[in-house]
Length: 433
Image (tube, rainbow, N blue to C red; front, side, top):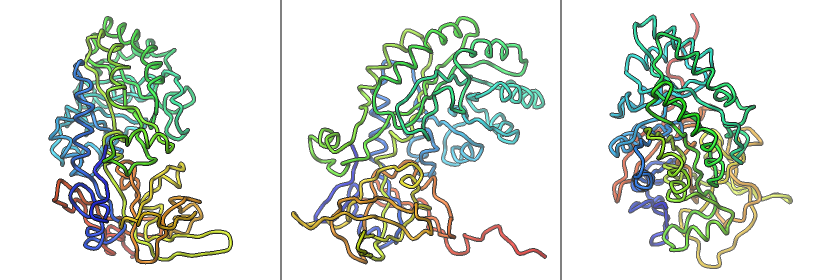
C-alpha cells in the first residue's frame, strides 16, 4: 500500500497536496510518506513474528536522516555498505551494534571506524577481505565479528544489474568453497565468527528463488552452528515492489488491478510463509536486509513541465528533472508510473509521449512512447514509487543542483533536506595558486 491518491482534484501524499508542496518548494522535489514506511516495516516485522529476527534496513535504498530516524524509532537495525552510511546511522540515532557492514571493497579506514563504533558484524565477501579485517583488528587490539557471504548460485530472475547470487557475480564466496573458507577464518586470531549471510538480488517477484537459496544454505548454517557456534543467519533482502499501476491505493482490488497492468509483488505474509518453516528449526537469530520493499512505494519525485515539443515522429514532454535526479529509467530501464498533479477529467485526451529531462544525454528519459494524459508547459507531474534508489543515486551531472526532500506525516510536511544552492555546487573546490 501507499499514501498517494487524488483528493479534491489534486494528487496528495497522506493529507498534503503535492501541488501545494511543488508551488512552495519548487521542482524537482522528492516527497516521502512516513505512514507508508511505518506500515511496511510493521507488516514485515509482524509477518516474521514466529522467528527470532531483526529487520536491518538496507539504507543504500534511501539514506535520508529523517527516514533512518523514523525506522530506528520503529526498532530497525541497518545494513550498511560504507563508512559514510554508518556515520549517517549514528547521526540519525541508530546504533552501530544493530548494523551489519556489507560490500566487496571495505577500506582500512572504514574497517577501523566500524570496529571503533562496535558494528554488529562484517559481512565478508572474499578471502583477501577476511585476512585484511583480521590484520586491521589485530593492529587495533580487537576481535572483529564476521559472517561470510555465501553465493548460492541461484538465479533470482531479476535485472542483470541487480542480480547478486549467481556464480559470475562479484559478490560473496561460492557455496562449494564456503566451509573451507570458514575453517580458514577460524584459525585467524583476530576474528570472531558470528554468523552466515547471503543475498541473491533485488526486485525479486516470486518466492521460489528465496526458497531455492535457503534449501541450499540451511544445512550449511546447521553445520556452522555445530562447528563454530554461530549466532545468526542473515538471509538478505530483495523482495520486489509494484512499479506499474500504483496510483489506485484506495481501491480494495488495488493489487489485482496493478498485477493486471503488468505489476507483480510478493506480499510479506506470502514471503514469511515461504521462508519461516525453513528457518525456524535452525534456532538462530534471523537477520533480514530489506530496502526497496520498505521505502520504494513510499516516495514520489515531482517535476515541472518546461516545454511540450512536437515533431513528426514524437511528442516530447520536457521536464525540469533529469537522469541526474532519478537515474533508474536510464540505468536499467526502470519503470515509474507518471501522473499529473492535477487530476485529469474523465475521458481527458491521452497520447503517446516521451517524458524527458534537460540533461545533455539521449538516455535522459523517464518514459518512452508512454500513453499519458495531455499536459502543457507549467503543469507538474509525479513519478511514483521513487522512494528507493531515487535521490540516493542523484548526482550533480551537468552542474545541476540536488533536489530538496520532504517528509509528510499526516497533514504535516517538513523539509528534511534543503535544495542545493549554487554555492553548494562548488563547495570544497578552489582555483590553483
